[in-house]
Length: 217
Image (cartoon, rainbow, N blue to C red; front, side, top):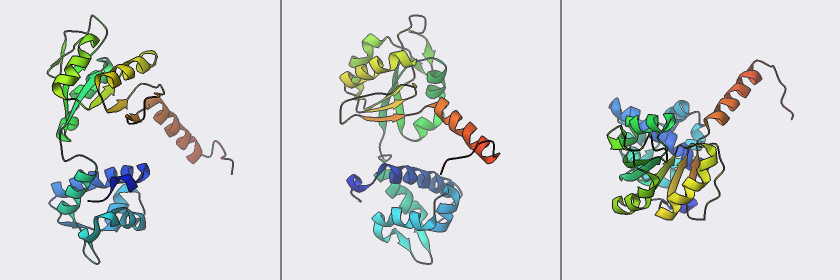
C-alpha cells in the first residue's frame, strides 16, 4: 500500500477520476485497461496516469495494462472508500434535501445517519428516511453514531458557526456547500463546493472559447 503522505491533492483528485472510470469498466465486465484508455476517459495524459499509478507497483504490465478489478480495489483502499463513513448533514433546505436523496452517496459508502436544521418549521420533518433534528442534538448524535464526516448546506452567514459546532462535536472532515471560507483547526479536512464559482468559471470558459475576451500572457 502506498504512503498516502506522499500523494498530493492534485494526484488524489486524479485518482478519484480513475476510480470512476474503473467502476464503469467493471460494470461492463472489462478485465484490463491501459494508461492510454484511462487518460482518454479522464483528460489526463497517459504518461501522467502511469506516473500516478506507479505507486501500486506490479498492477500494471507492459502491453497488457492494469487489471481492472485489482486497480479498482487498490484505489478504493487508497482513497478510504473501502469502508463506510458515518455522515451527518446540517441544513435541510433545497440543497440539503437533494443531498440526502442522492442515492450514490450511500452506494459509495457514505451513510447519512442524521440531519439537522435550526429552523423550527423544518425540525421534525422526514426527508429521505431521516427525521430532521434540532442543532441541540448534534453533539450527542455525532458521539453516539461515531460520525466522522459532516456536510454543510446552510446560508453563508451561518456556515462558520455550524462548522465550529461540527468540530466541537468531534467531526474530522467537512464538505462545505456554503459559499463561505472556513478557517478551522489543523487536522480538520475541509472540501469546499461552490456552485456559483463553478458557474462563473463555466461562463468564463464559454466567453474565452468565443473569443469575447483576451487572456493576459
